[in-house]
Length: 279
Picture 1 (cartoon, rainbow, N blue to C red):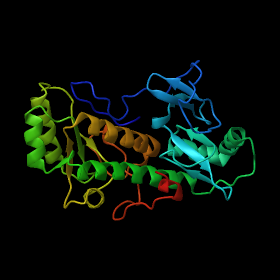
Picture 2 (cartoon, one colour):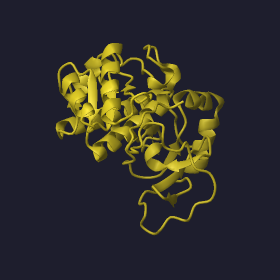
Picture 3 (tube, rainbow, N blue to C red):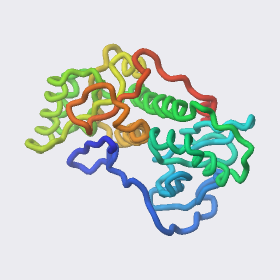
């Protein structure tokens, strides 16, 4: 189950997008997409569509994870879809990927996608994908912070929430329950949704990681009042949270829908894999 929350003005936030599309799609228009991926190119209403090599589900490419074949033959994550050459796409969770890798289904899917068996799948590929998605999501939060489109501090966020200007609300995994409830109530009041279940999303990292990613001290709560920035953050978080899945959460949350917690992220940001260097 993916994590979700929304506001009364219709912004799509984590898990409100469709799980996938099935059926026929029109052929890609000339020049609509410039990569040379091996799997089912198409163009849907929201942009280029890809098919997961494991589940067969079609979805927007921005909601899936691209795997690239490196020059040395290794299969590596390319979460920003910048690496040259052919790619294969997956839209499954880490747990599903690990099962597919163990049973040989990942190898078969990649062989069909790349039309070759001359590649090596790193044993820690799922961990590499998780690290890359984590880094991508935290980088996005950092970019929005540096652009001035992200709020921190309970008082500032509460003020914007009560004024009806808050678009998205996030919390560190170790944020106290009373702080979360206070901001959620202010958000409901500001959007005339008192009595609803509107609330923020607990992220799968604690305040040390969020503070480091945003370049600020003691980041516990995050608010966004810019709709475009909130959409960018939502998209990055959606892929990350879907991949790690709620099952991986060792950090208690108020409800099961408030988020998962990636292990091993208590004090350092994950390393960037080499394909992340493509801009």
